[in-house]
Length: 298
Image (tube, rainbow, N blue to C red; front, side, top):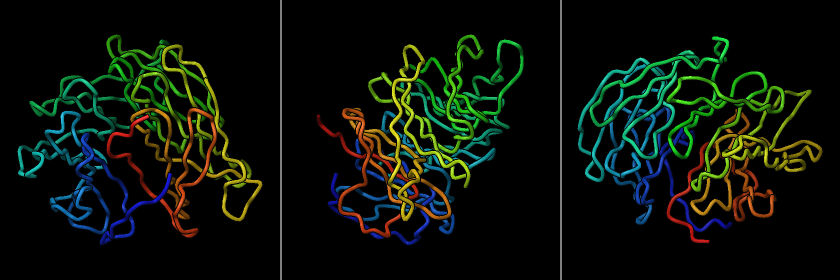
C-alpha cells in the first residue's frame, strides 16, 4: 500500500478510466480533452490518443477497446494494441458494464429498461424492463452484473439493492441499504463470493460512509466496514467512498469519491475489515477514479 510511481496528465479532471485485462494499457477520459488518452503502464508514458472521446471499456479478452457515450449515443470499437478503428454503431441506452464470459455490454435507459448489446456483431440482442413481481419498476442507479453473468445487481432510491435474473426477466430479491446512501458503486469480487457496494452520502444532517459487503450466493449482508474518523478536518464524520475497484486476489478494495471536494482514496482490507489511506500520497491529494492494474499475488 505505497505510492511507487506517477505520470502527468494534460487535464487534472479525469472523469473515468479503464485498464486492459493484462494491465499493460490504461485508457483515460477527461471532459476538456478531445480524445481518450492511452498510457503504457510499463513505460509509464502516453501510448496513443483516440478521437472522438468516450467512456472506455477494455473487453475481457483484451481484443478491443470500446468507447461509448455517457448516455444514449454512439459506440466505437478499436483493436488492441494498434488502436485501429474497427466499427461504430448508435445505441439508444447508456452502457454500464460488460459480461465476463460473453461479448456483451449491458446498458440502461431511464433507469427502468435494460439492454444487452453484442459488441462482436454490433447488434442489440435483448431489451426488457427491470420489473418487480407486481409489475412496478424501481429507478436503477448503479449497476453491475454477477460473476456468472446470470444476474444484474442495481441500487435504487431510497434504500435498496435489487437482484434481477436475466433469464426470467424479473427481480428475485432485494436487500436494504442505509437510507439515502445511493452515491456509491457496485462491484462483484473476482472470486464470485461477494458484492461490494459503497454506501455514501454527504447530506449535512446524515453523512454516511461504509463499504457494504453482500454475500453473493445468499444475497444477505456479510459485513459493513465504516469509515468514521477519516473525513478531513471532521474527526467525528465518515469518509465518503464512491468508485470502487477490487484486487484480483480479493484481499482489498480501493475507493475514490467523485464530489466537488474530491477526497483521498481509501483502502479497505477484506481480510481484517480495516480501512486506511494509501501510503505516500500528499495530504492535499484528491481522487476521482481508481483502477487496479496487473495481477496481484496473495
